[in-house]
Image (cartoon, rainbow, N blue to C red):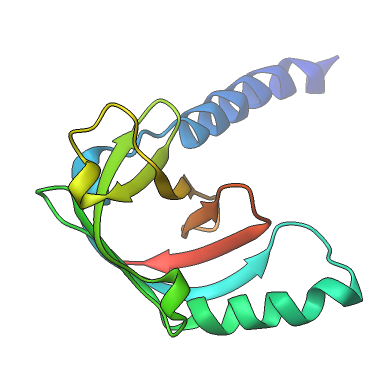
Length: 143
């Protein structure tokens, strides 16, 4: 009984802290800058057959940078020409924590072809991660 009175406030405090941490809002201004990929990982286990393509993707993103300029221009560098974006347009949806990159020339169009969608997450280890939409790829990034 004595411990339950102490435990309940601690659990409430922990729950509030976790909620605030998970909901900590990135803003457009916090996205602007040059982000360097530090590590490439998978969010789920892969089969031996998938290992070779993953190693190629890992190599392609290992030295990549994501540049998000204040004018919404986006540049993604990569050793793989197919993953490079030289003249993109980025938008950040704060409630979903997602960066969408489209072609710069299509920035005013109602229908935009998405080149890349990135979920942004600050995790408890203090690092920022980019999760590439529709893939099991997780990039540890640092500005």
